[in-house]
Image (cartoon, rainbow, N blue to C red; front, side, top):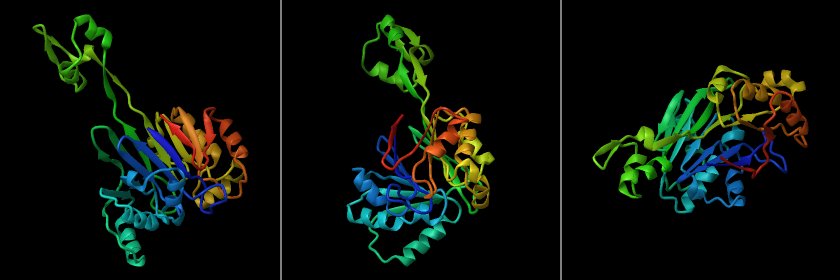
Length: 296
């Protein structure tokens, strides 16, 4: 699983930072969380084909998180996109998408399905689960979990001891099915081990809230907004944003393994102050930069 940061600024982009966008690549899935203005160019610079995107998860409908959607869809239409693009967002997303298509005049030649998400699991296949919870911003806002399902792996020492050869029998064990070998039942409990999948949490615009805590619990990677340093906590409360310290406190109480801060106010020419703020509460933290990649 790879996480690519496409935009790490907040409302106002800077020369170094685009508006919000994170791409998670897992197998055939390309999950784009938010799509700020200029996201399609960021994808091009990063060498990611638009046909890689399979889903867009919208946290909320403030412009710095969605203004890149019309241009992205237009370019996908022109690039021979043959899949169905699935777009998920909070209640109101269908209405906003309809209005957007009513404003912009372009040839939309791709299939798009729009889903409104409330909370809990909203997508599941054999490899991934997508979860959402309500955050506490000044409009309807969702945070997301991308959860990799556990993988069953063969206990090689055990099966070699029994003399089971490579082939269909091991395949059945890996599927979670017991087999018969030399007249005896071989169960999956002894012949295989389940390796727990990775859990990524994306917390966009919010103040500290129960939804953020629920999503972040035991995550391998927490990507969290940190618009302000702690000396501007009052401004954060006024505009419904977190400070770097509050993001670190969330990571600490949630037993998170790694914290990556993003969504920085354009007032910060560098992120040293924000990272120091967070590190006072949580050690394994870094500030995202545009085009930074993390592999899990």
